[in-house]
Every structure is written in structure tokens, then in C-alpha cells.
Image (cartoon, rainbow, N blue to C red; front, side):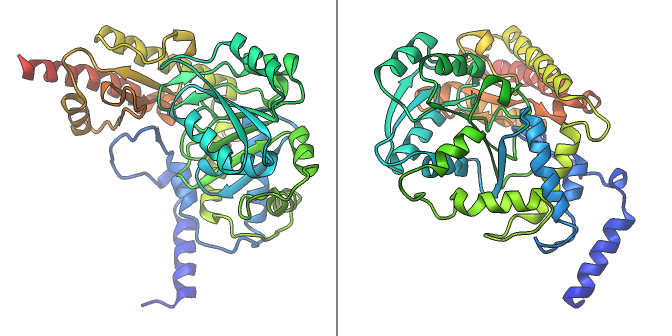
Amino acid sequence: MLPILSTRLFARSLLRAMSTSEFKQAPHNIPGPIEVADEVLFANAHPSMSHVSPDFVPVFGDSIRMTREVLITKSAQPFLISGSGTLGWDQVASNLVERGDHALVLNSGYFGDSFADCLQTYGGSVKQLKAPIGGTVPLADIETALKSEKYKVLTFTHVDTSTGVLSDAHAIAQVVKRVSPETLIVMDGVCSVASEEIQFDDWGLDVVLTASQKGLGTPPGLSIVVVSERAIQVYKKRKTPVTSYYASWDKWLPIMKAYEAGSAAYFATPPVNLIYAYHASLQLITASKQGPSLQERFALHKEASRRVKEAAAQLGMKQVPLNEREAANGMSALYFPDGITASDLLPRLATREVIVAGGLHSAIRDKYFRIGHMGISVVDKQRGDIDKVISSLQETLQEARASKE
């Protein structure tokens, strides 16, 4: 067995000898919801190193800066912390909400329930406005609720993965600014960041929380939260201590500031290799390397979404979203045609190397399925992923129907 140091040196020399263009993933199924680019997986294979290494510090700092570019903000503070998107809920609840503070949750699916549960866990007094399945909360209802109570935060899910519903973030923010300007606007963007347009500054958002594994095109494991200057001031002026240890911005804000300024700092060890992978993906997304601009990426997601949804409609599949304008561009939630079940369709798709997700919303779980179409599967048309998904849907549905005749 090679000594540890020798093994690391060998790995480093091997990666140096192999260029990114030479690295290709082994053939595998198209995953849901997103494929990861070769460049990103190659970066993830970077030799392990210390989080205070002079080589790593600028990678972390650049990742913070490029995160702002994706959200189109100049001054908001990103937090990049090891954890899933769920950790974003804990950050919001523990840093911005004090016991007894009122929180208004706009519920468009499964994840509205979960966010409400998290806020209540930290002592928030939560009121939910629940949309019908496949719908969004009417703006008039939001206005009425804001006039009836003073809310510390309003939260909503930009794209609820359980229903494929896209909420109008800009319109929601406009209502809040007009009716209750002191209320913080918090958006769960786990399934929307980098596949749906988000104008953080122009729309007046206060928090966007997301994760690495969907539109940001990176393996899972990184919680990403972007916070406005206004929300940072609210956190700093809280009357009681932050109610989480690991999620506390008392601990993490100095870390983010230090790395962006070019210095290492320590509270808890960051996921070094995952940050390298995230950095590589951000370079692709922000066109730091050759590729489409952000606006072009959003347009490509809309085009792919239209193609998938039109093909599904021709096959007799109805969308879960009640309004086409409120259907996500990075995914499609589709009801099975009459007489077809998950067991008829999903295993057949899997044999064609196409992986889709079953239903998640408890009220309709067995009646629908979900297709992810985001990231390089959409941006790189030469891959043919969208063509393959559509043709596979057509073939498997034909097979399933024939098997029942």
C-alpha cells in the first residue's frame, strides 16, 4: 500500500495529466432531476486538501461572488454551508424568527407544509394560506392576510417540486412591499434557482434558499442561502439569541466574509471537493467559460419545458398545474392517462435509461409522476436528452396501452 502522502501526490499528478476535455462520465441513466456536467464531476475529483489551503480560499471566495451573479444581486450575502436544502429552512427560522413572531406561509404543495413545520419548531406563530392542488395562492388573499396581522416573514416556494407549480415571485413581492413593507420576503428556490429567472434586487427579495443538486448542476450536499442587507440587519437586531448552533449566522457570517476577502477562517469544515464542483458549475452557468448567458439559459429552459409539456399533452397527459402560466420550466408534473399507472410506465422508462420521479403530494401521489428538465440536459442540445425523454414517453406509453388490450 502506498503511503498516504504518496497516494495524494499520485492522484494530483494524475489529475494534472488528464485535462477536463479528456474526462468523460461512464454511460449511465439520465437521472431525475438533473445531469451533472463532466467538468463538474472532474472538479469534484480534485485531490482532497485543507479548507485553509491557499489554493482553496479563492475558489470559495469566487463561488460566493458567482452565487450573487446567478441570483442577480450586487449586495446580498450568500451562505454556502454543508447540508441539504432543508438547512435553509433552519437558517431562516433560527436567525430571523423569534419565539412568537408571526410567519405567513404560502402553501402550493408538500414543501409549504414542511417549511411551516420548521418555523413552528423554532417557535414561530404560523398561518398558512393553502392553494388548491396545482394552484397558487391568489394575490388578493395574500393582501387580506397581510392587512389582518403583522408578519415578521412571508415565505413561499418558487417551484414546489411536488406539484410543478411556479409561483409569481415578483408579483408576491410587489404585494408585500405595498401592503406590509416591513415583512421579510423569503423564497424557497431549491427547484428554481438557475432554471427560472430570479431578480433578487429588482424584485426586493430578502432571502432565497436553495441547494446544489438541481438547477445549479452540482452533486447534492451544499445548502445555499442568499440574504439581503435588510434581512441581515433584522437578524443583528434580534432581542434573543439565535436558536440554532450549526445554522447560526453568528458563526457563519464571519466565515463567508473572510473567504470572500481572501482569507481562510474556521467554524466547521466546509465540503471542500463539493465547493470545487460548485465553482466549476457556476463558471458554466454564469458564462465565465464559453456558454449561453443567464438569460439565454432561462430561454432554453422555457423551450425545453414547452416541448415536454406539448408532447405529454399529445399523449393524453394533463399537467398538475391548473394554469399553464404557473407551470415550472425546469420540471413537469403530469397525471397518468386513464387506465395507466406508475407500474405501467416508470419501469419501462427505466429500461430506456430515463429516470423520472413518482408522485409526492399525498392527495394525488398515485395519480401522477414528475420529469426534471434542467441544467445541461436543456442547455446542451447536442446531448439529445430532451429528445430521448420525449421519444421514450411515446414508446413506453404505446407499450403500456398495448399490454392492456
